[in-house]
Image (cartoon, rainbow, N blue to C red; front, side, top):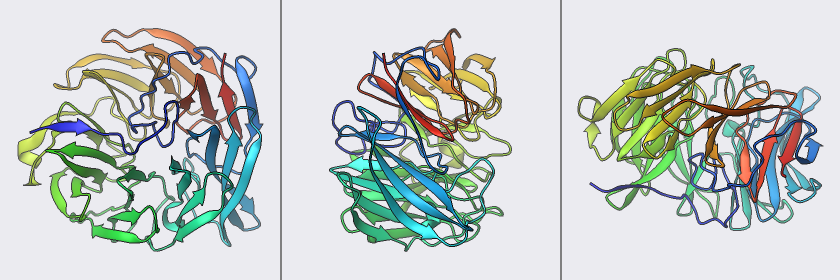
Length: 402
């Protein structure tokens, strides 16, 4: 069988137009971004961001796009912002919708956690059960709104959409009747909606799906409650699944070497490697390896060549052989982690929840190359574009450049 990880859309060089970069794999092609920064060092600009959101910055065509939720009485103003990447000036600030009563969320979550996607002059935003929209990147004009994805999230929404071949794909795993859906990117209409085939005692999750190609055909990889499901992108039909008990799944899967690497639980996280290309229930036939020591609950794993890097929520960082699961190293970093690791400047960047970032050599041997700190909470994954790093805290958006 032939497998390949694909770029989800066609992007311009230097853009970071979605969660975890151009290929949604945490890889930056940048080699000249700063290795050292602080609240005052290598700061090209910094701006205050109203409200709260854990969506990562998305960068395209000289603009940085963010979503945020601004308190408004007992409710919220859900907003989309475009910032000039050169000078940090706000180009436009558009309300997606107002919410009369603020929904309950987890203390680690926000009401604006899914990351926007920028493509072909449009901004696609997703606020979970509160709706989706397509806006013009130039001025924020609303091109369509979708409020058909009704479900009951527990602790709020978290998973970002992915875009492939003119369709947006989202996992909607709420407290009941979880499903995965495809939305036409041009019209905003639901193309298909497939119920999860596995009934779980606890059915909510927050995963960002991934797209790959198997034997020349694109497939959607979407972990969820008690299973990983693989879907046909055209029809939404479930192609295969792996059963594993777990709930509240968050990390986006990584793909490579003919396998998918994913987490299947929050309270007792385990990282699994599964061969792609199966049919039906492949639990007994396609699982290659499993790791629970140091497995992440929230940060996505990062595949670099033959090595898989990941960090647990409590700060245990690991490097393992992607093909076998053999561990090269496991070391403790300071703090707790929600942001996903990123490969930039040829090194791996781990960002904890209190503004401390640690550069680690991308190698089978553990070596810290440097540490940097900014004030504030840092749950959003950093973005890289045109020689700069964009870092979002709970109050500030930074552009770091030399």
